[in-house]
Length: 237
Ligand SMILES: Nc1ncnc2c1ncn2[C@@H]1O[C@H](COP(=O)(O)OP(=O)(O)OP(=O)(O)O)[C@@H](O)[C@H]1O
Ligand SMILES: [Mg+2]
Image (cartoon, rainbow, N blue to C red; front, top):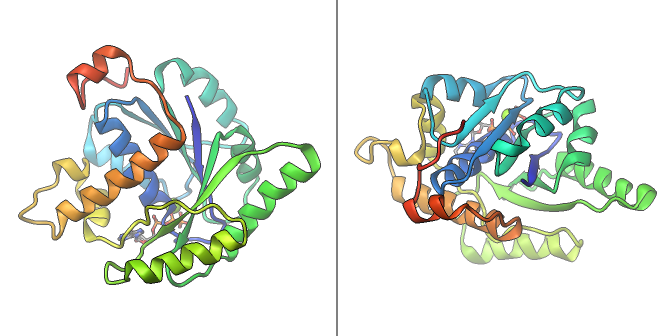
């Protein structure tokens, strides 16, 4: 059960939104997801309260540096993917979460290129590698990208980052009102009303593409029963 941490010490980069998109898309595929909510604003916990029961998703609140390893070991038998949502500031949890992670995702706002918070995370990953020989897979995910930004402009940003040896996901997360709406109304992109949400199909396509890229990087085999019966077949129990 891979542990995926979203980290950027700069607030507002889009961590929590990306956590929710990944968690709900993986759950929709039939994976059991545990979200470890360490965001002091508790957005995911509030979303879960508004949503009621969401199949395959459990949320653990008030996660601290001391409790994180315990949550992981206690839930490893009922979880396919752990997703950690960190605070948008430097915090002792950052090093603990990174140390326990199989992959660190660093959301950076697409074109603003205000990458300082992301750079701090990358420095910490480099430090662990150089000083302790601990190599943790990581990628930048470009977030809140304006839907009008051309593929060419995006390719340029990606190539600038990869020239600096920073791995970047192919899928960028687009700025979509649907991604805000799920926090207000609860549920998932799949339960939103297409008549009330603009560009819902595009939002779904984008979230699925993002989740599929992560699934390819960190594959988990679903039990045959879950594969055959499709989404929402397993309870979070
Ligand atoms: N792809 C997106 N489309 C539309 N709105 C977005 C998107 N990503 C983030 N936002 C909005 O931007 C704001 C900040 O996003 P979010 O809370 O996900 O960032 P964060 O990195 O978790 O912030 P913090 O560091 O404060 O925890 C929120 O109002 C959110 O609704
Ligand atoms: Mg957040």
